[in-house]
Image 1 (cartoon, rainbow, N blue to C red):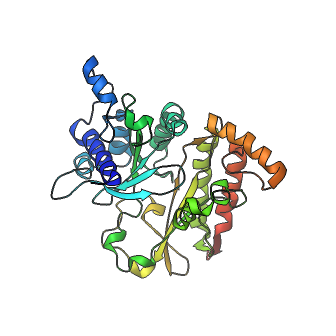
Image 2: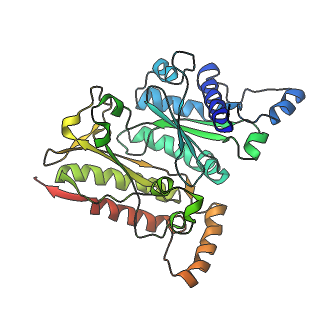
Image 3: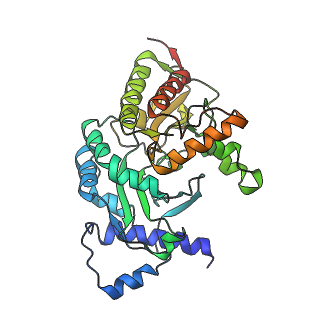
Length: 348
């Protein structure tokens, strides 16, 4: 078995164990010295625990009305259903992605210490409180947060990620639709910024496919009514306010559209209009939208260090500001300008 496959199987088994075998094990591991020493030498199959499990259980049960038995079943691992389905390394952060066999949930690793520490120590509680108070929020639904109980060789050398977020998959019903190639997805960020991950990394070091995932450009317009736009804008404004107050930058708007005639046979069960799908004013498209990737904090060390690097680079290169080194207030302003620029109003 190759390294990549062993790694993917190990991550899948670790997540399965944390979510189905020991669902309430956070903080309850009491291991002897010998077991802790042996644990340190683990490479792929790590001992993951649920972090703030009760907070996420409350969101699933009380806010999003997710059936707990069905939720656990999504992460089952057996000969009939297999385990998590790997989706590859989708970006420059080193994150790996999996989806559940039923496509309802995605698993994103957070290999960078600054990212998972920020989410765990600073954003997690405000996020859970905010989502409880704002069930119509467009922030992606994070249903669980997993982390290792102590370091291992696998995490120290970067062979296995130490933390993972479990989140909804707004494309969960795409496989039930016809003509999958007509579904379009866009990971949208303000284009005013300079993106060194794309513009400075030599092409031989990465593929065009991965580079294209850094961010997308939507070269059309979202044609909706004034009331639909007001709904979208108010929630984007409110959601990005939370991120601004947490000093978060570099988040994106994930936009989905597909022809209105390709209605999936198993539509998403949600009360959220922009998750279920909004009909375009001309009747041609269905749109969905959520806010993603809010794990980068301006005050964390990597962002501070990059600010100095970019300022020095711009003296020579004159490339302009970077999304990950701008202020949270400016990023929110540019983000909202992007949202406004996407839309073409029709009707009422």
